[in-house]
Image (cartoon, rainbow, N blue to C red; front, side):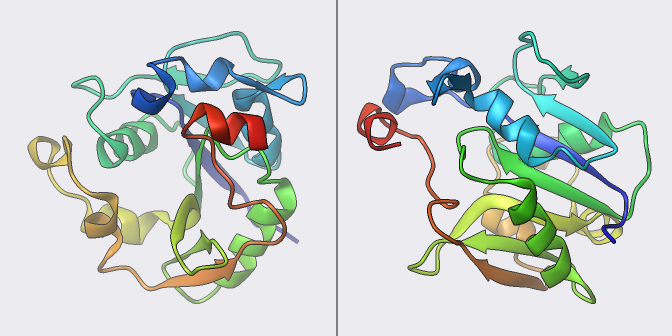
Length: 184
């Protein structure tokens, strides 16, 4: 049985290669990327979306990192700080990964047992922005507020013992360009 967890969906990037379009509102298969992301974290006790508020079918909390467009570390930690519930783990998902499912999140949780977390990896071994993190360990390595802006996610995660979970099928595919949207 899956232990209770919270989730942060990162939806506030600049989407520069998409001309600045709001990725959360882009549709794939007749549904927005945000709807796909919220489906993936369906089992979460609470969800915080770091991005501009848009209508959703599920109750979520919307927040923006300060300063705006502070990067993935600032967004992740802003989302983490907005959580009202206290759970042992936190699922983190980029909004532009429509093939991540609740099964993906469950596999990440299983792989994280006894470790600081687990991250989805593409077939070439590159870590993707779909992961489960132990909240206490994340809190132990977090930088102060001033150092969060523009910080590299790989540096934040470097001290953590993260299991690698190889993507099944297209789960690792994200949407960064119009060509990616066409291919999805």
